[in-house]
Length: 231
Ligand code: DGL
Image (tube, rainbow, N blue to C red; front, side, top):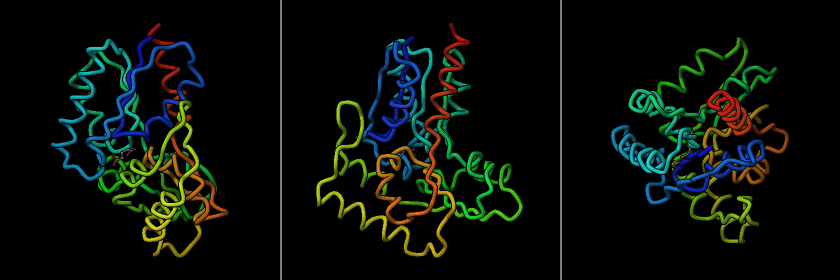
């Protein structure tokens, strides 16, 4: 089956890698829309137009299933896309707040783009899932997705290549600034932007004992279930 995937660049390759592990024999078409990165700092109207353009390209190629490998585009646009293209099955990527809150974690830190942090859907996820006694901090990370986009190189299997000294310094300086007000070590850190999964080891080095999670394997399993139904 033809599976279309898009993101504002390299972040969504982490989702594609997870899907390809489960579904080896499908045809994939990936749009790395880096010229419009960062999605997380665009207005809703601007993002809507960008996302529709990507969907049109994937639809013309013949995709029956489209994976929005981007939290920002999912939380802001998936409902509109489902209404506009009822013939296409959309799989979205959302911050793994449900997974994090289903554990005994007391302190949860959610890292996401400013757009994702502000979105109604993210706040709905919190209201629906936060348990008594859980502290959840939503940390907007302006500039982080594009810093990653510009400083990470991928190998042919989409694994990030070792960082150059300069890239490491740029990324660590950015993280240091973003994390400066976090006083308690989180039990769980949710990577609510697919780009952030590419720098998991760097984030882990700031919070050595935190468990770091993303929604990638969940998206892969949902994709497999939908494909089974479509066949
Ligand atoms: N990778 C995307 C996400 O998951 C978008 C990052 C951006 O372009 O701001 O939110």
